Length: 304
Image (cartoon, rainbow, N blue to C red; front, side, top):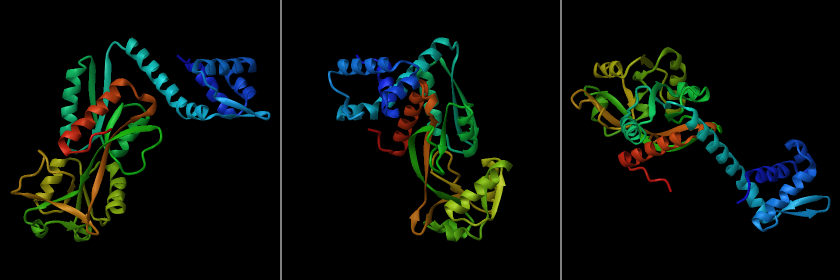
């Protein structure tokens, strides 16, 4: 069995391109670095490097170890940290964030199933909008979040895809659009878009609706989904939705219509995200269970 310390030394030599600079980086002698590389090659029974003048080059086996060795070291560090944490914590907790005013059927089922499997873990839930959830991940206020994806995911986060939901429009049954099989974004330009958002979120939300969905700048902001639906029923405007589920409005008051742009239905991606440096067992287990719940409910293809 190869030692992780030997892999760390090997990667330092590769990164610095020099045994002496690797020795300085690791605070050991150059002879100690050379000895660890020889021991690593002896343990594997192969050569990882070959001399090339005063320098060296990697063999194909060495290139393979250089590519995958970092992942191995990272995973070993995470296992070590999680093991220590499990040994020290008297009460384990998992803090889960979800989008305000979103449908949470899969999340609720996952929390119930997770709590049955791991009763020793106290699950806490926090609601927020897109920016709040990503900010709380950065500051470690939450461990993972079910979140809509609006831009490229930062490199310090890991994620699993949950679903691409088809966007719908909710309008009053009295609205002339209620008889349409679908609506284009251009059909909505003269109508008020009703959005659930607090004061801090309004500028961000309106910008996303206009830039990504092509809607006009005619918005009315509310603080709750119930208030927004009442305004839709009253004919004050329309509201975006993403799927027909248990939270669907009564067909006697509100109609949901597919939303298209340039003859293509608009979709919206959801993922579960968490920090790479906070990738413990319970976090990854919860993320995997949530993904499987979405697979059952939405027909999402299983991960390989």
